Image (cartoon, rainbow, N blue to C red):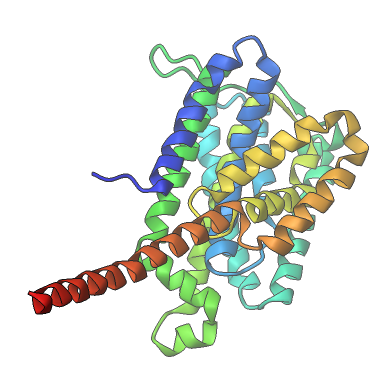
Length: 339
C-alpha cells in the first residue's frame, strides 16, 4: 500500500502526539496546556462541520462549549454525580439545545445567521455569569471530578487524561475524514457553494444544515465536558464570545473543510500563545499581523494550501505522463522508418 504525502503527515502528527508526554515528563504545565489544546481542537472540529462544510458562520460555539462545561461542573461538584454520567448528560443536553437553536437560527442566512448565533452565545454567557444561585456566577465552580477509573486506568493522572483527549481527537479526525469522503460531505460542500443550486438538484438544504449545526453543537459540548474535568475549576469566561473568535482563528489558520486543519491550527496558535505569554496584553500585536497575512495570502489555511500544492503536483504528473508517452512513440516511429 502506497502512502500519500497527506497520509505520511497524519502519521507524523499522530506519532508526535503519542510521544509528546515523554518529552514533557518533567513539565506538567506544558502537558496540561497540550491537554487543553486538544479540548479546544475538539470544539474546532465541531466548528469545522458547520462553517467549513456548509459555509454557515456560527458564533455560538463558545456558548455550547460553556453548556458542556457547566453541566459537568455543576453535576459533579454540586450534586455529587459521577463524571461519566454528568458527561453524557452534558453532551446530550448540548446536542438538544443545538438542535432547538438551529430550528430558529437556520431560518436566517449569511450575516443575519452570524448575528443570531452571536446573540445566542451572548445569552448563554449572560445566564452562566448572572444566574449566581445556580452557576455561582463569577465565583466559578471548584472541585470538579475526574473521570472514574476504568479498570486499572486512573484518569486523575495528567498523562492518562492526556491520552484520553488524544483518543477523542482521533475520533474527530476519523469523523471528519469519513464526512469528507462520503456523499454527506459532498452534499454539505454543495450547500456551501450554492444553496439555491443544491436545492434545485434535490438536496434537502434545511435538513442537512440542521444536522450539521446540531453535530457542531454536540462536539462543542463534548469538548466542554472534558475541559471542565481537565481544569478542575471553571468560571463564566469559558463561554465568552472571545473564545468563539479564538476557535475561529484556530480553524482559519489550520484550514476549513480539511481533516487535519482544526488540530494543526489549534496546536500552532496555542504554541504561539505560550511563546508570547510574557506579553499577554500585547500578544495580539505580534500575532495579529501574522494571522492577517495568513488569511490574505493563504485563505484556505496551512493545510488547505498544502493540499492545493499536492493537487497541483499531481496534475503536473498526469499531464506530463501523456506527453512523455507521445514522445516515446514518436521516437520509436522515427527509428522504425530509418531502418
